[in-house]
Length: 260
Ligand SMILES: C[S@@+](CC[C@H](N)C(=O)[O-])C[C@H]1O[C@@H](n2cnc3c(N)ncnc32)[C@H](O)[C@@H]1O
Image (cartoon, rainbow, N blue to C red; front, side, top):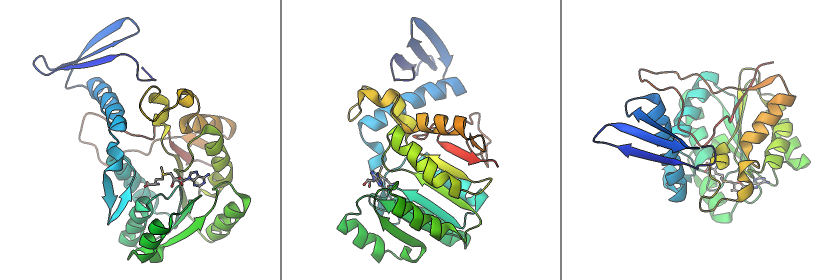
């Protein structure tokens, strides 16, 4: 069901989830990790169709993320306590403000944002924000050598660096971003290739037929295969008294850890 094909039904009377795909039909107890995964797949797809991720803001700025991805990012940031968080893809700036608010709360770290086009109203609002002291903005293509060298120079004094890649989500662009920014990540920290969910959205509104192969998840897989000091590794849950440990995410296989 990687491209969203198949049927998922929920029978609340019987308390089961029914998954039918490739001629196979499974009836799964609702109270099971497998049912949660199937229902989450349906929720993620439906949420994409209705633009659920476009309904949130953080401290006044729109943020285009799933709340669970934000909470998981917060868990990783609190564990790693980066001196520097770099994000490609600013949009309205909500994610930069989110990271900046964590830096302020932790008493550590600052944030660099790169976007090919920082629209004037977004720049004005980000620069007027009370957390702007934590933020540096660069306008340009994230893979432009001049931008990369500015960000690399800023990263020189930082001991721990984390990177979020959330700009152009083609495989080629994410691979180029990984080549440029993954070396800045400190050992034990992460570079995140966001939005690998595209692979599961072929046929959905605002999708493209080539998303099945042309997506950030494939870039993460190819990059880690060629660079053994980076591995795809979802950060451990820092709290789990539940029965599931797989995140409901737009970033499947997106967390790339530098191990050496
Ligand atoms: C998905 S939005 C970013 C959302 C933002 N991180 C958030 O959480 O709210 C993608 C952004 O990437 C920018 N972008 C697209 N291609 C880019 C490139 N080649 N270099 C830098 N930014 C790019 C777009 O202008 C857009 O603002």
